[in-house]
Image 1 (tube, helix red, strand yellow):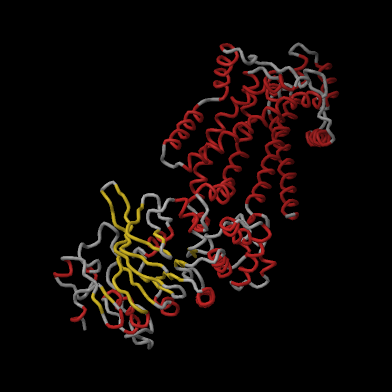
Image 2: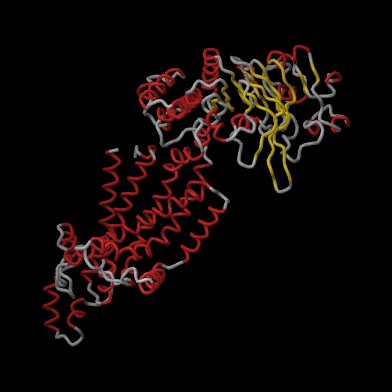
Length: 313
Length: 323
C-alpha cells in the first residue's frame, strides 16, 4: 500500500511538471508581446524595452520558466499585468467561490446519479428504468450554460427564490450557498445524466456476476445482495467517470460562472484571456491542470480502496 | 429427505412457452449422494437452480420439490430466502468468479451465518475460522482476512464449500464443483466432499458432465439428456450395465471404462451430432436424432420408464433388442 502510494505520488509530481512545461511552451509560442499589449500600440521603443526588462522578458525562456516554477512552488505566482496585484491573492479569492461550486456540483451530481442508476438497474426494463433513461437522455442533451439560463428565468425571475447571479461572500454562509446552488445544479445536471447511465450499466453488469448468485444462494434477498455485494464492485467505473468529468466540470465552470456572474476562477480566466493577462492565464491554467491531475490521483486511490486486487501496485 | 416429483422448468418466449427441463423425478436420502450427469445443454444446471429457487426471472418451475416434507415450489421469495443457505447449500462451478473480489473470505463465509442465525460478528468469525479449517485450508487463522485473489483455484473452491456448509444445510448441491480445477486438485475436492457428506450426514447432489467424477462419488446416478432424465439407478448398476443408448454412448466416449478397452491406440467413440436446443428437441424420444438404434416408434411418443433389475430404469422402448 505504501509502495503504491509512493509510486502514484511520483507519477503525480511528474505529470504536474510536464503540464507546467506544456503550458509555458504554448504561451511562449503564442504571438503577441505582453509588454506591447500592456502599453498599447503607441508606446515608445525604450519604454517597451524597460518594461520587458522589468517583467523579465529579456531573459532566456528556460530561466523564466524556472523562475515561474520556483515561484509557483513557493506560492509566489507573480503580479497580474492588468490588476497589478499578486496572482496568488486573486486566485485565493476566486478559489473560495469555484472550489465550493465544484464540490457542490459533484455532490449534487453523485447524489442524483448513483441512486438513479441503481434504481434503474434493479428495475431493468421496467418503467423506473425507462424513466431514468429518459431523464438521462434529456440531461445529456442539455448544454449547462443554457440550462443555467433556464434556471435563472424560472427560479430567479419567475419565482424570485434566488438572486439571478453574483456572490455575497462567505460572511453569510447561507446566502453564499444559496448563490452557489443554481449554478451547481446547472453544472451537475449533464454530469448526473451521464453518471446515472454509467452507474446503471455497471450495476447491471455486476448483477450478472457469479458471486452475486453465490450471495443469493446464501439466502440474501435481492436488495441485501445488491447493497453488500454489487454496489462496491460497481463503483469502479463510476469513480473513473467522475474523475474524467472533473475536467469537464472545470471547463463548465468557466461558462456557468459567466452566466451567473460569479467571481470565480473560471470568470477570472475568461477575463484574463480577453485582457491578454498572460501571467494570470499561465497561473490559472496551471492551477486547473493541477486540480485535474490531483483529482485523478484521488481516483487512483479510490480504486485501491474499492478493489483489493489493485492494492498490490 | 428430498423428493422431487415431475419437476419441469419452462421459460416464456415471444413464440410461446419453452420447456428447458421436463419430468424429473428422484429421491435423495440424508447421507447419500446423487450424481446427475449429462452433456452441456442437458438442463443439469437449470435443474440445480430450480432446486435453489434461483431460476432466471423469465423461467418457471412446476411439479413438486419436497425438502424434509416442505413443498418448495410456489413458496414466496421471502420464505425461499430463509431456506437458501440455511437448509440448502450450493457450490458453484467457477471458483475464480463465484467469490466477491472485494470482500475477505472470512466475511464471505461468516455472512450466511450472521444472516440466518443472527450471530454476532465475533461468533460468526469464529464459525468461519472453524469452517475454513474443516475444508482443509492450512493456517486458516491467517487466511481468514485474505481476499479471494490471494488464493489458488483449489483453495477458493474450498472457501466455496465452506460458504455452502456455513449453516450446516441438510442438502448440498454441487454444480460441476471440480470442472474448473486441475486434475490433482479435483481429486482432493471430491475427497473433501465425500468426507463432509459422511461426517455431517447431509444429502449431496453432484452435478457433472464427467462420468469419472460421478463414479467416484455418487451412490445413485441420474442421466439427463436434452432436459429429460433418460436413465436412473444405483451408480454400481449403471456403471456395470449402462442401458440407454445415450448412457452407453457416454461410456464409449470415456477412456478406460466398461466396454471400452483402455489400451493405447484404441479409438474413442463419439456420439454424432450435439444436444438439441430447447425448442428444437424431437417430440418423441429426445435422443432419436442421434441414436444408432432409432426406429419409427421412437419418435411417436416420449418413451416410458422401463424397469431393469436392481431398481435401474431407462427411457428406451428398445432395451431388450439392443445388442
